[in-house]
Image 1 (tube, rainbow, N blue to C red):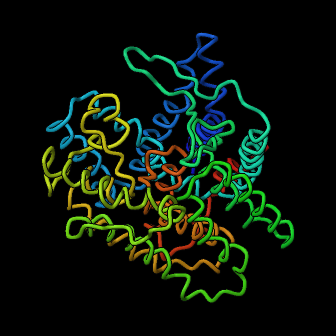
Image 2: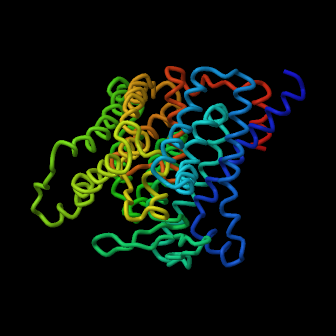
Image 3: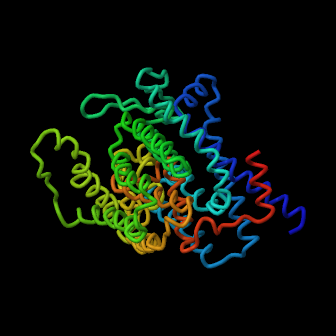
Length: 430
C-alpha cells in the first residue's frame, strides 16, 4: 500500500469512528442539547451527527467498492434500500419516504460501516465506560432532581417535534429519562453500555457491581421490554464461564422465532388474557394490546394501504407516519412486524437466513464474541415488543449485528486491521 493510500485509509476510518461516537454522544445527551440549542437559536446543530453518519456511510461504501470490487453481495445490499424506496413512492409521499430513511440512518450506518467498527472494537471498548457513566448517572440523579428539559418541545418548519418526552406509567409514576430524549431511549442506552462494560470487566465483583447499577438505573425508566431482556441476559452475563456453549447458541434463534411467530399468529387467532388479577392484568396489558390491536392493525395497514408481498416501503410505518400520515399511524412494536410492513412477505427468507446464522455464533471464543452474543440476545428479546430500529442506539447496534452475523462463522477477532488501520487505532485513541 502506498503512502497516499495508507493516509486515505487512516482518514476514512478515523472519520467513520468519529461519526459514530459523535452520534452516540448527541443521542445520550439529547434532552438537554435539544433544549439549550433551541434556546440559543442553534437547533440545526442537533442534526449534524446524522449528516456525519450519512457522509461516513457514503465514503465507506464507495471505498469498499473501489478496494474490494462490486460483488454480488454488495449488489444485493445496494438493491434492498433502492427497492424499499421505490415501493414507498407507490404508497406514501416522497417527503414521508425521506423521513423514513432518515429514521433508519443509524441502522444503515451500522451495516455499511460495521467492518470498520468491528476491526477497531478495542477503540469502541474505551469509549463505552464514559457513556455508561453518563446514562446511569443521568437517570439515578433524575430520581431526586426534575430536569428543566422534561416535556420540552419545539417547531421544525410546520412540524411539532418532541424534544424530551415527559410521561407516566399506568400506576402514576413518572418514567425517568435522565439526559436522554425519552425513558425507553435511556433504558436501551443503559442496557447496551452496561452489557459492553460488564463483559470487558475482568474482576467478577466489579462486573457484578456494574450490572447491579445497570439494573438499578433501568428500573426507574419503567421499560418492561428492556427489563425482560435484562432478565434473559443476566444469567448469561454473570455465569458465562460455567454455562455450556451449545444451548446458548440456540437462544437467539429461539427468541427470534418467537418474535416472528407472535405477530403472524394474530392473523389466525384472537387472544384474550386469562389473567383476572388486576395487578397481573395491568402488567401484561401492553402485551395483549399488541396481540389484539397493534399487530392486527399493522397487518391491515400492509394489506389495505400497501402490498402483501412487496410491502409499503421505507417510511410506510412508524415515526414518519406521525408527521405525514397520522390517521394510519402504527408503531409496529415488533422488530419483524416492522420489516414485514416495509418489505412485505419477501422479507421472510432474510429473517430465516439471519436467525440461522445466529446458530453459528461461538460466544465463548472471545470476549468480543460474548459481547455481541449478549447484544444479539437482548435485541431479539426486546424486539418481541418493540420495532427497535427506530431507536437511535438500538438501530445502530442492530445494523452492526446484521453485519456481524453476515460474517459468521468468522469471529470478531478475525476482522484483523491492516498495518495502516492499526495506526488509525492508535491515532483515534490517543
